Image 1: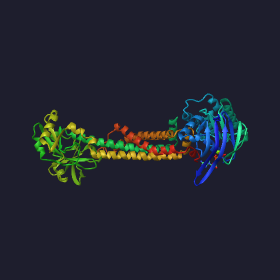
Image 2 (image 1 turned 30 degrees about the vertical axis):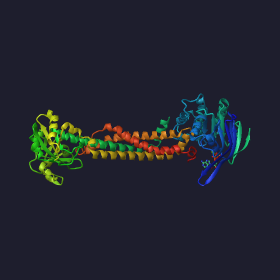
Image 3 (image 1 turned 120 degrees about the vertical axis):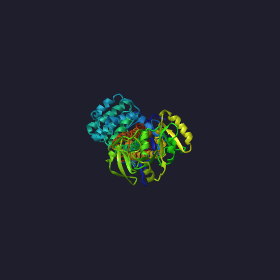
Image 4 (image 1 turned 60 degrees about the horizontal axis):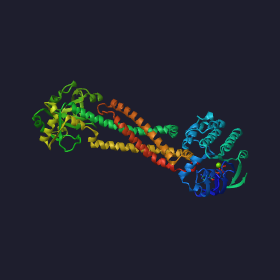
Length: 226
Length: 366
Ligand SMILES: Nc1ncnc2c1ncn2[C@@H]1O[C@H](COP(=O)(O)OP(=O)(O)OP(=O)(O)O)[C@@H](O)[C@H]1O
Ligand SMILES: [Mg+2]
């Protein structure tokens, strides 16, 4: 076994909705090394989010091999996948997915509590500063702009210092300035702490921050260039 | 942090929270008020018997210890027999008949009764002379605005109200024994015989003696023991009634919490998905819902106790005579346990439904 953080071979995912089968993934092959920063691009509906959900242990694969940090996801039980999410994965959702009844601070604290962490990791204060949400911590998602919610979601994904960060369009709702801030932060974390980062984006400029970029189309990975 | 989420969730839908808690509270109130009323009424009856000043009560020997309120089972001819026994100063037969829901009427030979009790205290009017003369106690007279000289219809009979007495002795209505016997087809019968001894300290010894002599006919019981019989546990019908109301409270509490939690789970499908995506185990999700149900039940209990206090004040203001209520703080934890039990039952199904929910499907739920 080699040291790749993520190894995917022949991954298929089929959603059954009503009597139609949606083949979201039709045989994905992908390898991501430890400490790599990978950008994933591709048109809407090509299966990018679906791939991330599977890598994050949120949805089971239909077929194929998926190894994350040496764990065979198909062999894991539901509760083992939950544990993996707690311990290894930070997820930034395309739709933020903050809890509406909690303030930004409590949203972050809840993720921390579920990850069984007691306090903010070193440097987290600076991350909040950098994300420009320090003044917004006492607000509930309802009172925040889309971009602010997105940055809180990023902070939440980072609070447990996950080995792997899966970021689904983390800059989708940010202006260029904030977008650059976030991308610089991710690249910095990647370089300094060796965090493995996978990021979905529609923006080639954002993708340029990554070490490598892949493109998806119709449930497959098309090109892979370094 | 979980607790904070629980509180924020409850706060977020505070109208639902409050309404659910209120329904639980009403259930708690019905239990507590029922207990308070039962006890109040029993205590009231006990005090009335005690108030007569009798040392020993003779009742039909039924062979078991339960309290029976049915009328006329003792032959009146026992009264003169008992009166002649040694150490007996006075014996008087009392016939009891329920008049309204829980208010009763006593028929007594008034002159004999005056000797045992040291005399009723008249606030207005005087002792009965004719067969249709009626005495009413003060609380009832006040509640129904009765005054001496009035005609009062009770038991389908027109009575002439001749006196208003201070309460706490015998029933609220006192009439001549023979009239009540005729009215209720209990000719030559009484419900119990009250006995006054020469020396009250002989009560226990005399009880034993009486029981020896009257075995199979009458059962003697000292006033102290008699009072302890006035207990919910000694009245099977009342116990059954309380059990039914309690069961009803559990069922309603269950349904209301079930509904509340069920809608919460459906409405929060997405949030539950988020929790799971963040690494919450199914049990954590159940835990959150159970805590919400517990908080609902606790708020419900607090509301219930407040409502009980209000209900008691209202009952005492409206009907002090017919519905004596006492507080039953020793039942607060029991009522709380009942509410909690119902709430926990109600949280089970929604909790399991939430625990089973697929995180990703929940996240795509709009
Ligand atoms: N839970 C689901 N049930 C059924 N079909 C789904 C589900 N999630 C995704 N799909 C379908 O799978 C396909 C891939 O969806 P996915 O969300 O992975 O695309 P995407 O590349 O992330 O698109 P976008 O750029 O718009 O976010 C789409 O056709 C989508 O409709
Ligand atoms: Mg997507």
